[in-house]
Length: 154
Image (tube, rainbow, N blue to C red; front, side, top):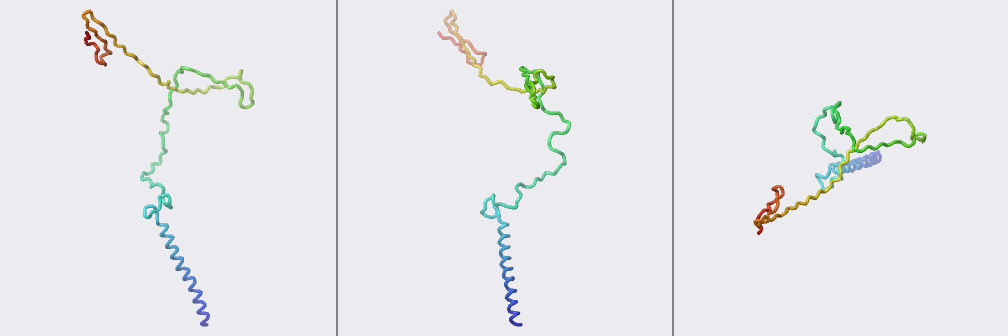
């Protein structure tokens, strides 16, 4: 009977020892899980189990985003074009038949607004001088923007 008790005590001690080791391991893993970039020297990219963005404090309104239903669009109105190009299909996309004499089935219009290339305008201002019979040479002015060259050169 004594040998049975000794044997059972030894068998009972082994799971208790394993249980103590496993509790220590769980505590270490929980400590590692609590570590992040704010409380250790770990880089922010190693953070896990955190929200990537803070939750918005705005409350839901239930409305859909965008323009209100029934409001008009903001498209450009059709204008009288300066240049027109007509594009006709040469053959049927289905059977390949020639469509030169086929009946008209509708037109789709597209207008393209093109800005002209910017150009440089060069203006030359010539201020002519005139000699008066009194001997004084007077120069012209440009609309009063530039200093007058009308002083007298003798």
